[in-house]
Image 1 (cartoon, rainbow, N blue to C red):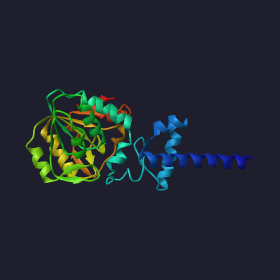
Image 2 (image 1 turned 30 degrees about the vertical axis):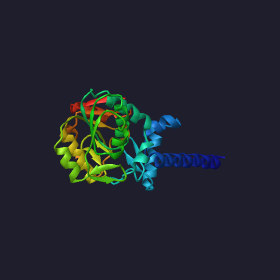
Image 3 (image 1 turned 30 degrees about the horizontal axis):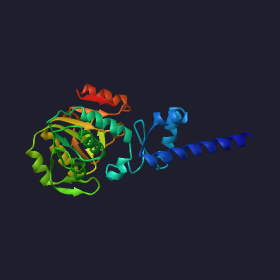
Image 4 (image 1 turned 90 degrees about the vertical axis):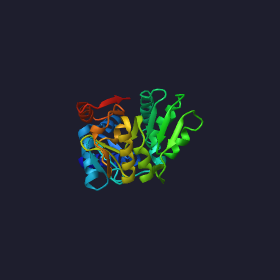
Length: 264
């Protein structure tokens, strides 16, 4: 009986680990706290399972959870269509909070990406804005408005529909905007904001320098991740809009650094 019981327990462990692995591969990232609550299993057990999966080369452990091997790569650069399906509710709330920071008649810089696209849709509530963007799809989102829409020009990246290169940078160096909404692939509160593409990082950096107020817009899964190219260190941004699942240590470090954090 004891042997049979042990065998059934082993099967349960294997099934649970297979479930965790499938969830990581599907969502790109999982959090220990969420898995513990969803499965009714202690956080210690979840951590041990994730450690086991990492030891087998199946996932990459991160602070508070685990990443898929692709997601954990600094070069991981998913398409806009793939990104659009992730953390959709959080992105919509972030977009609403971002639009609340805008005033009628302002010049607004908008980065490329799915969160930025959601922000562009929220901006349609205004009557008169000047919107500068390096994203072709965002300019399209704003057709039919009375806005003055300025595209930077440059070479288009197929993954993100963003325009990059010297032409985009030169245009941005001549502009002055009231506010800039910056979406990122990684946000390490010690290192800064990062993206997988070097040319994209350069354009984003030019946008930061062109704006009076810089607002990083990213859901909590982007924290504690680093992509290949640094955009700017944390001290070059003024505000962060994210969801309330952000790690408490990261939240404290941001506020201690004097960065305004808006939780949605």
